[in-house]
Image 1 (cartoon, one colour):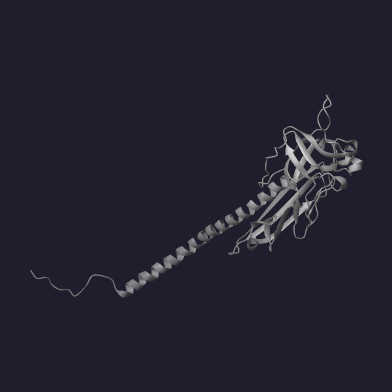
Image 2 (cartoon, rainbow, N blue to C red):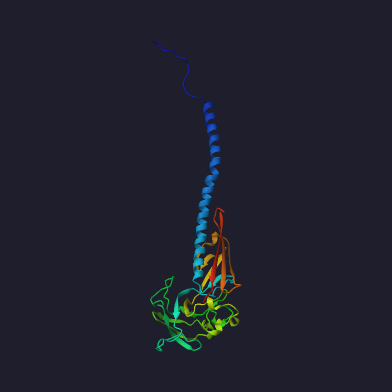
Length: 293
């Protein structure tokens, strides 16, 4: 039986194809509108997370550094270095008096001294500080009873945008071994003896110390070179020349110190970072320093 040709073919026309393409394009555009915001939000959150981690890492370093600063040595009024201080490398307790058997070498205030006995297992001469440098040697100073500006003879600190300034209570360290410390010949002022009557008299120290705030018999071994921080859009955030945050990321940075009370000092760091896509984050960190010599 012969099949009859109808003259019709199965398929779709060009008009139908164009209509499908147009409809598919409209649907894709609608989907893109709804997807665009979540996708952009995801990438923005990733950029913010990167900036936040960078800023938080720098602020953690600053906060940790400040907690190891020599009491009353922090300076915050430099134009180039808005934050400077003396960093503690080691420390311990010194002998205040001889034993009942008249033995031992105490630290004598007001007289030339070249060493004293350490109490409670002071750091060995082989110990290194956090930066890997040897504790003992000419790069270290031995500070006792570092007070505020009210007692200038016992106030080792850092000049604004300058070098570390050590007074009589900061002679060069010669060696530090278990049981003893040797220093360059120096006369520790009697005002630096926190157990003395003069130091306990609030009127003689302008009220900067109270007897229940002191820890008698403590000495610190500090680095002869101060720690200096920069924080600006031109230099970024650096620690003694080591870059913590690239200047291209720093949109704004301020470091301020509340020095109205010498015993408790508040250091505020406000850091704003911005990336190439203009994403911005601002972190603020407040560090409370208890200046207890």
